[in-house]
Length: 605
Image 1: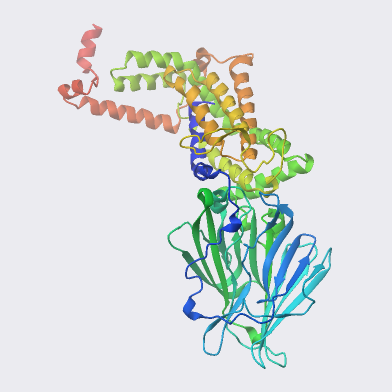
Image 2 (image 1 turned 135 degrees about the horizontal axis):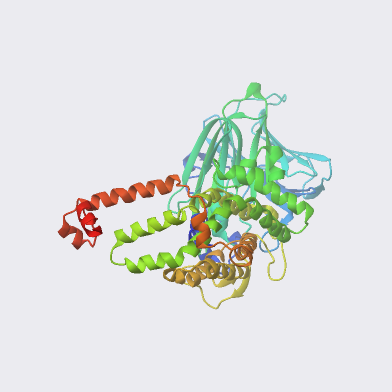
């Protein structure tokens, strides 16, 4: 690995992992976030809400268990209080529960005849099935549970839920009816408050992904609540496709049926401090229908499950899966890298081994881009003694030094910048790779071998009794340490300039600390890729039968590229400007001025 390649990797690491450096500070022992229940100020204006007196009818519970979900409904407001994913665990080993403790989701607020906004979360709805009972739905079966609340002797609110045995979505219906069953036009809002309950150990990392997304006529709008001192909000009105709340690996999305539908969506969010330096983002989302066709009920499809690309694709929610920058990086990750990784895993049922095979394939695919870098590094290594002689000879005259270096490059047909363009072409690929390995739920809580028990989080080989300054964490990643050793070996092979010897020791140490905050799956890929690069470099420099020499470089055909031509023109311009300087100023700046042509001819005689 030459200097430019290493600097490029460091640049990518800095650009894509500032969050990792920041979040690593918070790997202290955690207090469960169940105890953190911040409320958004002003989410529901107090002066507009008519709060009913506590009901005299006791609250009743209905629990529905499907093949994938365990959901609890409350008779108060006909709301959801529990949405559990049976096949996924949180960082404490408990089933993933998406609804924050104490919240009642998908609740209704309607406006009475006086225009007052009425909160229905404490109103006793009457269920259509027996309460305090667990209902089981499996396979292709479905179950409908209805709730009804009488507004007066004539009007009432009806809402219902449709559960399916093998799906992560639930059907939701809302209707305002008269005594004869006819629909009425009623202003109301469907609301989700409090966001989603966090599931990962690192709350800052989870907050990095927590957001609200609104799909409006195919355009995506994202609300990211980064502010601590105030709430941020957005509003979208028009043909809504869906509204989603997401964290790193899970999401809840509300899809009006049929899609798109005319709604106004209000989203509001704010960041809050959590115990031990953590961060929690809370969001409130309100859907307000703009019209009601002939008093027909409103029907929604609510998805609550993992951000698995194949699972959310039928719901047209793939935009919620993180792949990086949408205009360039996302297509690479979405249509190439993720399918390739899943295809390898289909053949090799171990994601650790699949990542190793994936790294080998990526090494082969990137070979046309990497080879110019290696060749450039090899040529610069051959030329290093000559470069050092010029630097020593003209150490007091930088202009003369640059002129002689340029002449040497021309003599041997070397472009010192030839490895930069291939490196730049790799940057979108590296970023897409980082996004795929960092956000793929397939790697979540997936073990590999030895101390690597979860490919989605840093692998802790050694726990230190202190926190590393600047980085903030108190452990060393085993895979990051192995990668640091690999980088050290690469530097020993490629760095010949005495002025760059410090890179041999400093960069591996820096990368070890930097990559210790990376998920184990990502470090496993980088380690494998670097080992393959070492083998390739050894072949070119030591084990190849016909080794490249300076004489070979001289005999090779010389092609002046665009960059070398510009460098030559810049050098000529600099010499021309140096000729125009007064001799006294040139001596003061230590610039050697070309001698007049007559003096050169006399000297030749």
